[in-house]
Amino acid sequence: MKEIYLPKAIAMTVSLLAVLFLIYYLMLHNATALEAFGRQPTLVPARELTPAPTPADNREVAVLRLFISSTERGEIRGVRLMEARIIRSYAPNVLRLAGPWTIELDGEQPVRYGTLDPRVAHVEHDDKEDEEIHHNIYQTETTWELVVPLFDRGRELGVRQINIYDDQGERVFSVPVDREEWRKQGDQG
Picture (tube, rainbow, N blue to C red):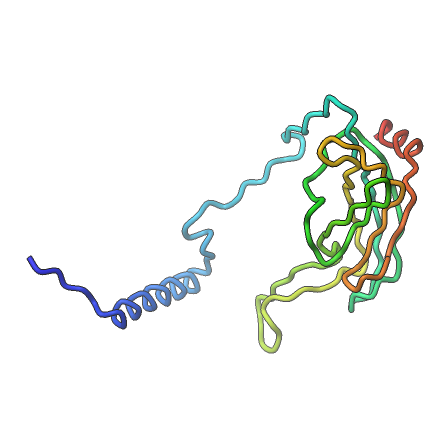
């Protein structure tokens, strides 16, 4: 029996028609691909989440709650420390990440790593006439909880100061680490 192969042009046309039909179907039924083919994500209430175990050694992280004020164009007006505490915890795996903002840990072993700009919100418009459907805006007031590792691979980093730089390389925040006071705050929290 002889097999028949469709030429590439016909196969591509069939694929394109299938994609166009899918888009038409989704638009007609006002559905998303996730609704049509996948499960909707389920939210787990915070009270049902299992906290991470406390490390057996003395590994710690600093938790900074910062208030950031900026213009709608993204110019930073100010960054204010609302709360700082040190808790025993495993650190998030962030020390070798890149990002538009930079966290600098000044200490015995200086470390720099990247993070996303906490003010940026990704928005999508439903009714688009003259604007892009997706774009970013700057929130003019943002509260940011930053978790800063004080250990790396089981070694104390000896962090004395935490500096934050924006995407232009300008230092927007700096705070000396007050271990004694921040640990008291961590014990209370």
